[in-house]
Length: 184
Image 1 (cartoon, rainbow, N blue to C red):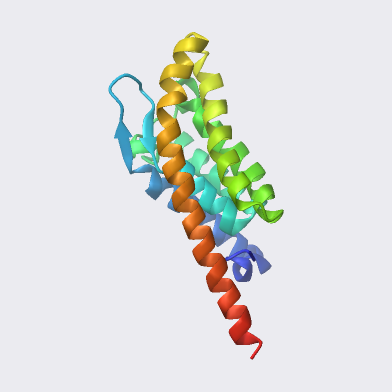
Image 2: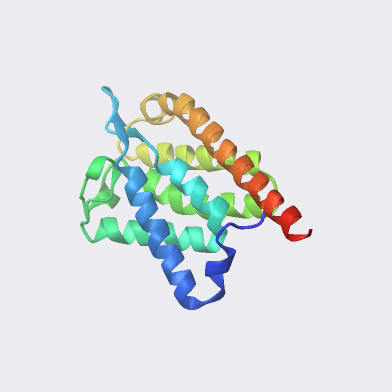
């Protein structure tokens, strides 16, 4: 699949706008948050947004978009899950998930470039959950961190992987259709 935002990447202004709108897209998707009764970590659409950014922007621009989002959070803007504004997010149990977004944007973006979309989507979710759970161990014992920071998010992760894969297949089919119509 060609990168959907290829036309915007040719200039510095296009790259800047891609990163800006990517970070705003991530902030918008962060507003969809479902709290769980036994943990401070929420089910959100943030990891889906990271996957879509990596898929459409490539690894570098997706990473920059996530870093811009993290900078917005650090500036105290209400961009975190559920509209939370917390410039000290780095000291909270959610910090590992936010750092995982940046790692995942780059690494899953690399996997998308290698034409392995399903592997990229699975790696995206697992990397975010693994980094988030590892950081949660700073606040909880590892057993509890796994039970409240990893396990409850596997089914939502499968749903997000499915949604992102459907999006990928739709964009891929559309791009193939455009190629074939351009060739005639």
